[in-house]
Length: 328
Image 1: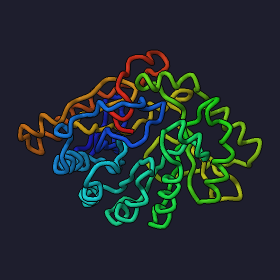
Image 2 (image 1 turned 180 degrees about the horizontal axis):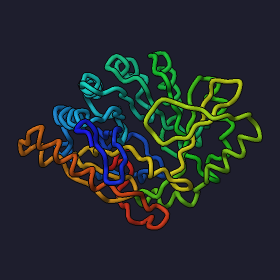
Image 3 (image 1 turned 60 degrees about the vertical axis):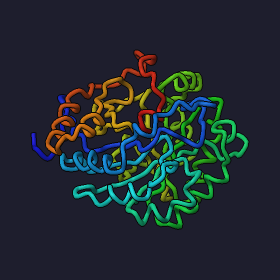
Image 4 (image 1 turned 90 degrees about the vertical axis):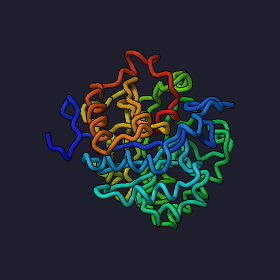
């Protein structure tokens, strides 16, 4: 194995880090975080900007080429532009992207693009203002303003992530396709996952994405598509248009055998699998004065703990943390 790559014991190369810079969020999507929840990680436990730069720098030296900034909602953290700028300057980092709910994106889009973020994913489950308020507790107009700002700032591609839920928003699939086609966005459908109590309750609305694909095939001519990025989406292209539609199916057709990512929580905990409890705390090492060599060694040892696959279907109760605690 090359010293310039991270490979787990199942032969998968880990070249993608999802970096949570806060577990706080300004929305309360019912499948992610309970209304009224405020049990956040203490700010003194957050990795500082310097610590984030050190950890991500260690990953890039070990061959990681893609980093996605996540949360919670990353735009609620002060200094987000500076964090992005620090990361974009790291040698070896080829792709810096960000996931957001876009509520605050209108005020940050231009500065984030100038800092070096090039791709952006926006969570948007509905185009109806009242339904948006029911799902998230927020205002749809702020998200739409943020999306417009992202287009004007030059982000490409802008990907819309829609969690499809039976009886909640599955009647808007075609409307979301039309919206993304009109706006020039990429659309990705995502299955609900039993992460935390909220995620398990949302499984009552689970809908396999094969159902959605078959619906769309009756209306559109779909051909195989391809999009830049390191994620697990399988893409189809709507013939005669520029629209790519991705399907992310962690439940009905898991993609564990090609998993190339790990997640770093806001507190410096390295999570090796979204659907398992395997994790390694890096913050104590950082604050004990560890050298870069020691940090890299700990990351290599941590990758050896990455499990072969999640057990969402077999043991949905085992992941007790909320998605915002792990990083999206």
